[in-house]
Image (cartoon, rainbow, N blue to C red; front, side, top):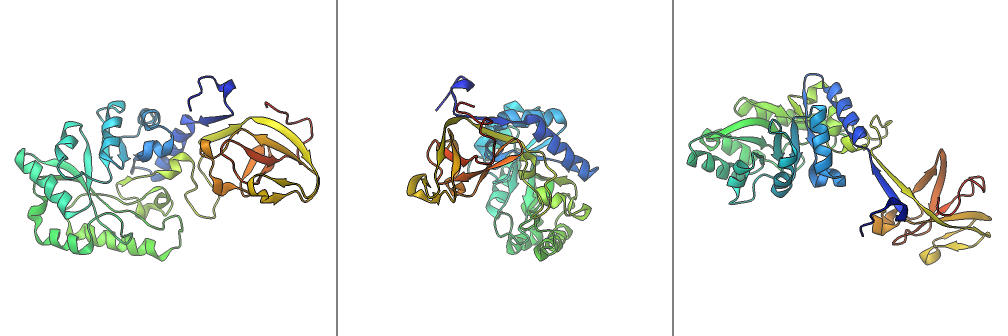
Length: 329
């Protein structure tokens, strides 16, 4: 549903582009001389890549990652020609020429992608840029140990490819003491030793906080740019990026034992004051937040009570003075 005037809306979502850039600068500064990219896949985590990426480019970011080819084609006109735009999933079969036409760089994850990209380079009698990804323990994307061995045995597979970076992806970096971090590091270092000399990219958002040994030449933060805490159980150093404000459409006082919402999954333990707010799962507020989430009025927490409805939620506002919150506020 499109609402043209904010005063007509039940909720207002504010996206702070300045905070996203501040988060990028915090990560960049932590990396020192290492390049800091920005992952803007899934429409910049749902916040609008066409708005987010140019702001990051203006802040100094020169490397951007998306997941799919169509994302990259749509984003390329919004970025300076001096920036590099990488596609994490590589090229779908048969459309490799689209990458050249739109100045895009694939992340090669399999022998078939590698062979198709090299074949295109040979057909054009040139060298084409790419990132080569190796799987070091996540079992998701990248050359398996067996595929890596076949490339090492036959270096001709890489002919025609300008290897910008060798990369891998950390699976458990948000848990800083997880044993897989060091195991993946050892595997990554082993892969780099047997491949042609190239720059390396290893650290995601959380990997940046594992320290300089994980930084290499290019880090690829994603979630932390948008305010997600990079270290499990630690204070979040990132600025909040998204703010959802909901309009109160009704207030009511209820007696002890009164149920609230579908299925009456919450009952008042004592007389309470309840606010009905005009946001719900139609606005993206997950139903799994039912009876679990907390809203805030200033510094006062307001528990979400009952089931999240399509376009309303109920908040327990009993801890606020009665005159602090009124309908249409």
